[in-house]
Image 1 (cartoon, rainbow over the protein chains, first blue to last red):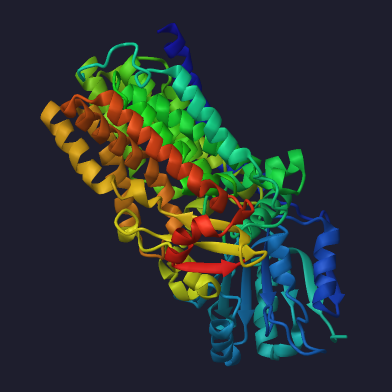
Image 2 (image 1 turned 30 degrees about the vertical axis):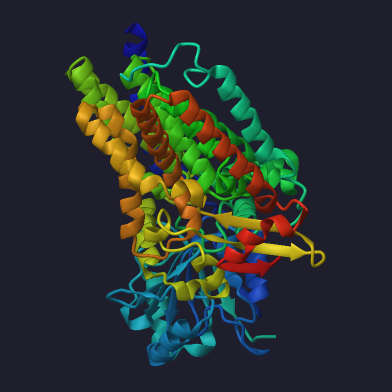
Length: 192
Length: 423
């Protein structure tokens, strides 16, 4: 019985410690870069290399772009599946793919037709969720997107060429108001 | 309990016979298991999953909705033995063999003084499909092992008052961390344990606390720790709950169309309701001539698994007649597991029958023991049954283990195959 009197409290304490660990361990493993920076790139491969070389890990990505990941002809962004690679390598754990409202119906059709999608997208009030192997990808039209990441800084990708000046101001507004903070913002310049 | 055989009977409490069967089980699982230096069926998914999990903490091949312990184990053996057949398969060889020992130990606790433990053990030891899966990376082998380990430790606590409850809790967590097959069987077994303790020594506050701590808090702690790679990707418990809800949703969206490339092969194992009713053989072959070839045949062990349903009835009737909860445990766990699979709103394939098999074999063994007692011919019945199990297992072994064989002796089996692809 003395054995029991020590064992059961010890197990209870251990279990409690694991419970606390489930909240603390993940956030502690997220890797950010020390000084916020904005980088202009010219291809999806540049983004992949930038993220990898920066040592970021376990992050949320917010992508303002026309196409998310499907391979497209040359001189189109992205020319490779950089987000998929980042999720497979643990760099990104969750992504927001924000698209222009005028392209929303096309984006939905492309998602449904995408042969790499195992199950159909999960509909939400603001858009839909792609259940990627390594985390959720929220697909949302810009008009319905309100950043909700708390204090966490995101990896932001912006493809300026596809946004009207009004839309660009809305995106800038998120940053200025502090609703969307980023330690590494990538601007997609002229595609090589 | 039962009218006991003479204590000298080789079939009762015979550690020597049990050891012989265990050694044979190990030989059948180990011999040539690493010869095939290529992926066997789903190994192509399991190994890349394990390597991705170990390297990046991410999963691969749409395996994200399953718990991660088996991937971590395979990654561990790959680190230990290399990225080769030994690294891929050695853990299953061990878990498969150890499961044979565990079913014997469980049988001794459930049916003391009877030949049932030896019969159940031999059924599992020589089950061609258990041998086949033990020689690959299928998750069904470790999850069955962990559940049997849990059940054994729980029964040591309930039947022999040993202080094994915390160890049972760890094994329960490892079961949960491997696959969800026992989602109903686990709470059922806890209820059984509570019932037995109430019958035996009464339920007081102290016992309830022990149960809550050892069989609720501890298993969940172990379960969460099995996801340490996943949590290491930046997630918290809230994300975990959301991921699990996504997983249930995603699994319910799956149809056979999602498995289009292997539809015929996967369908050949039959639907869950067929598993213990219709004989089924299916698999792959590599022919070297018109007379010789190697085979990886899967089956539902027709001569014996088809005895399951009548045996469940006999074992349950016997349990009710004796008013013994212990006698009813194996049939109840079988029903609990089977219900989950029958009700699952997603395609379930033939290999998923394996987690049910230990309970089926315990029920069959118990029924044979009861009938043998009634006939008063225990020794003859046990000997004939063991011989039949051994002969069938020895006959099937070469074609479930990719041994080079002449085709002629196996044509009856091959002609019954529902699907026979090439590999």
